[in-house]
Length: 248
Length: 307
Ligand SMILES: Nc1ncnc2c1ncn2[C@@H]1O[C@H](COP(=O)(O)OP(=O)(O)OP(=O)(O)O)[C@@H](O)[C@H]1O
Ligand SMILES: [Mg+2]
Image 1: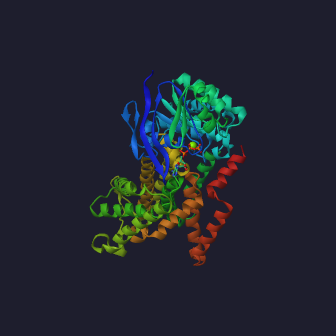
Image 2: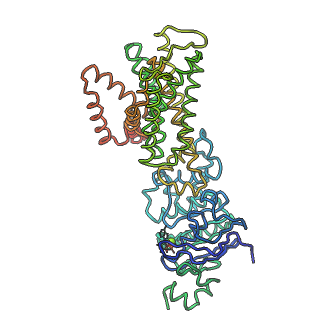
Image 3: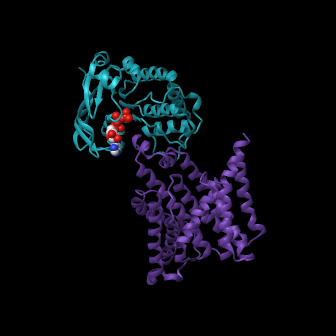
């Protein structure tokens, strides 16, 4: 078995009595494409929030490469090579699409230049390539707030990819993306992950996407993991079919 | 196209005092306030409104007066040291203020500047109280000029600095740091997740804006020949915000356009009527209602449609 990149140990978090994480322990292994499925409100986004330092668990620990990151800020964790695409896209909505990308690229290095322009030929090229990858090549000059919701999702993913992370956390990457573009996106994404050797975790509601792309699946229910395994095995579990997949 | 427009505007400004000498003082003051308003506009990019920037304007002018009293008599040295004084004030105040947003940021800037104002007004023994302090005519590379000659030098130097500093600020706003600054306005969460320290981005902007206000203050001090606590009063800060909004936060020329407009309007209004505040108020209403991008928006919109 390959070594784990990210490990969560016995996480507990509650919001007004609702247990969003109720003793969660899990790990993301090097090179895998781990899917998290589960009903609405079962704590999937909360896990990502804890793992990226956005919220602190009441108890439990998160480790990146064996180092404790539980108390670190999102910024510090991002600096360690973890990028996130959000369930609700987090964009610089007043800026152009290409500027969102170039700022993300600059964030990786070179932000501290106050005299050289953000827009350099090389950076624009690189930004364009990523936009092309997610299918936004035609939108690059648009102000991001004018994009349709599905395209905002795509941009959010492209921004995360621009950080060239080792670990990418994707919160429902295909939600809001049209059925037509969904598999194009996944194919492009898988290609990029393989090519750049990025490990990824993705929360997903589309079972077809999970079945086709995930290398392993965690099934969430009421703040904890109720099943885990290869997609085939998980989908044949009667309880999972009833609670999560929605077919008995 | 925009370069030609800007160059023409600067040339016209440079020529104006030749035909109307009384304009020289008005224009010098307008440029001085333009620098300070540009400082306010820099912060506006991040969605932060400072109603206290007159403090840095005044701090720098007092800096000149104190240094002159201490025997420093070189124009360049005075200018540089006073701008550094304002930047230092900005670094200290900014370290505390950039943690706040929206109305809290605006009000805390106001509060800090009012404390400064009160100190300037009350510490009679040090600052001369409400009488203020004199800003003597300095030497320029060892040469002491007569007042009219010095005022001319001051005007043309201000004009040159307007172009140079304006260009530098333009570069800054187009740099990754400048874009990160605008991004603070739209999405701090994403900035954090990009690994960008928001507070550092804001602190740099705050120091830059304080230095700009300081440069304006030093020029104003030299032009007027005196610094008084009123330099730091909250209405002066309000004026800077007004100019920044008038000019539009889109670009560097806006701040100077706004300042020119207001100063010229002011000198026209006081000679014709004393309804100065009424005129300014009405002008502002018209700008906000019909030109939400300010004067600069008017220019850049033309530019965009001519493409
Ligand atoms: N910041 C918060 N404050 C209060 N309650 C919260 C907060 N974040 C999450 N919750 C609650 O915690 C529970 C888990 O939420 P979470 O967003 O993690 O679910 P999810 O599995 O991502 O759901 P979905 O599929 O709808 O995205 C929900 O009941 C939610 O209302
Ligand atoms: Mg969620």
